[in-house]
Length: 270
Image (tube, rainbow, N blue to C red):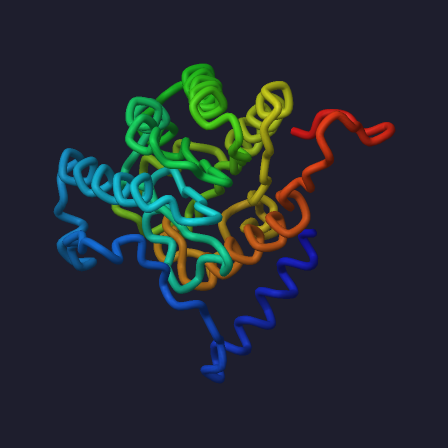
């Protein structure tokens, strides 16, 4: 899967150079009511409370309209800034990312989209916990609670926990560079391994994006980032390819069998 995704990235990189990338029209969940979403410059100035208000409005629209194939991105700025035109086609995407979000913050606001009926929920959270000095134990405990909450609230949804991405180490130019340098990417890799074990035990999916973004030193590849922490357009193209391939292979809707009949040798799917 890793080789396939990198091959697709190379092809899309060439296509982008010649201006021939085709993308789906942004899906508008607000067809009946327009939500005043600030432009990119203003977004950096929003308070946490203002973000919560915006996500509440967008989730309410999704809950009221019940769009088919609803897919939720839950997380921090990495999810928040996912370009709409690069999201995989064939789904209605609800972005529930907030810049600077932590695992504890996400846990406390999962109820925002309680009334929605998602087909899939993709979660990526944890890098800001590390930046703020949280222990692995606290991060993993919050992740367990996030999984428990989503499984209980959205029993028919497929939940996909995504790995924490590496950072650019000494090549990082992000304003909090010194904090990044205190976090070894080897620690993130081990944390992801534990997160994968938790996901398996909890019966949810785990999408390991980490290997797709690392260079030979184990750091975030320069071409995939803008500052050693946040992703460039090329980085999002790689993520998009991973989401598309993973969805096609791992998240195919289960075919309904006639009631009262069981397929031979078929267990309960996760």
